[in-house]
Each structure stands twice: as C-alpha cells, then as structure tokens.
Length: 295
Image 1 (tube, rainbow, N blue to C red):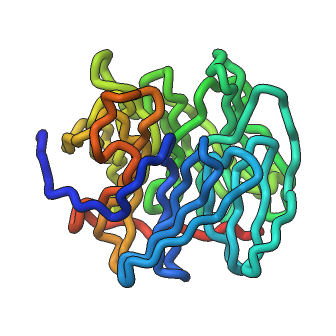
Image 2 (spheres, one colour):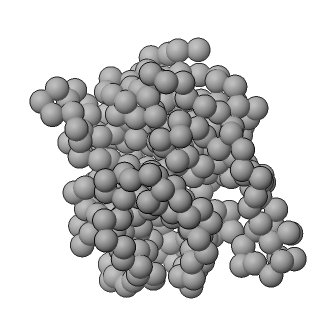
C-alpha cells in the first residue's frame, strides 16, 4: 500500500505556500499558486516554459476561464483576468482578517470557493458557489480551513475538506432537484464522512478525483499523498520527501501525470530542499478532464 514512486521535479521552487495545481487543457499547461507570495505560476511540460502572474492580494486559487484568462480566489473576493491580462472584480466581499483559499470548478461551470481566517479561528471561513455572473450562494457558513473540493466522474458526488476535522466529506449532487427548486445550480445535500485521517498521519488538504472515482488527498504534515477507493477505503499511500504537500492534480496531454504542490512556510531552516517545489509522478493513474469557469 505504501510506495515511493519516482518523483520528478517539474519546477524547482521555494514557494512559501504552493497550492491548487490545475491542468489548463486549452493552454497545455499546469497552473498553480503561491498563496502568500501573491503569485500564479504556469508550467508547460512540453516546452519547459514557465510564467508568473503577480496578483495584488494573496491568491488562494486560480482556474482557467472558458473564454480565456483566469478566475482567482483572492483575499477580498473573486476576480477575473481576461485573455489580454486585464483584471476585474467579479465578486468583492472583503472581510477583515479573512482570505480566499482553495477553490474548484464544478461540472456546471460554477466556481466553488472557500475562505478562512488568517488566524485559523474555528468557524471563521465559508464555502460558497459563485455563478458565472458573480452571484454568490453561501453553502457552508462556518468552516475553519476550507480546502479540497472535487466531483465524482458522473458528477453525482461532491467531496470536500475542512482541514481541522481530519475528514474528507462527501455530498450528494442532484441537478434535477436544484432545477425543480428554482436554484441556479444543482442541489447539494446529505453531507457525511467519506474517509478520516487518523491522528498522527497529518491533516487532509487539497484533493483530486481520478477516472476510477478514487480520491487523492495531500496530507499536510503527513509527508504523503493518499488514494482512497470510491468506497472510502485506503487504497494507496505515496510517501514524499517533504512534510507539507498541499494539493494534487492530474495533468499532461493524456491526464496520467500527478502533479503535487508543497509548502515551506513554518519549516524554517529545517525545510527539505524540495519543499515548495512543484513535483510530478508520471503515469500515476488516469485523471479527469476539468471544466473551465463559465464566467
């Protein structure tokens, strides 16, 4: 179950808080962020080309837009960059002491964006659905560290992590029920535990779902990535050479390479050399194509 696969360095970096890897299929690149350095990074594995976009605020996540450009989860709300690099606010809701964290695009093209307090105060964050026009619907009002979000291959399940709970939770998604109730998006309900990370094994952070419906989870302070089968049983543990992996995502032209982000924050002089880098495990599995934000 526990393995040490061949890890390749995609981008050697010293990110304070690397996060949110996302494969941008239209551009053939991997997008990831360094939250505390207010940077969005791009990496083209075919050419090795790297790009960096500086944001005006801490950036929790960046995702491709259907028409080109990016949607970003910033300190004070949701912003969009056009294909020409121009910036506009889509939803600005500043809350003192709070910032955007992980986010993901749902099968219907909406953005599910999480927030958290800088001091990680219990219940100080939220999880909201943001429509293509910027209209928000608060889904979970009292979370602590809103993190990994993903959907099953058929879109009927949504996975979610509030890191201090040590759980990966799962919800039922019913598009028909949402439409019948006049909602902008599918009905999401029935929260329940999918898997729990035992004490001493780290804390669940970012996640992704593969084509088999298995859930891959990065373990902060656990020096590992775990794969949970669709029934929630632990299927695989990938040991890593740094303590703070943050998130994972499948990328590459055939979506078979697993990219991993990591953090150096809080490690001080004891940080391992690869902490803060973007790594890749080639041929780790089969990923799912990710939708672009419809806004």
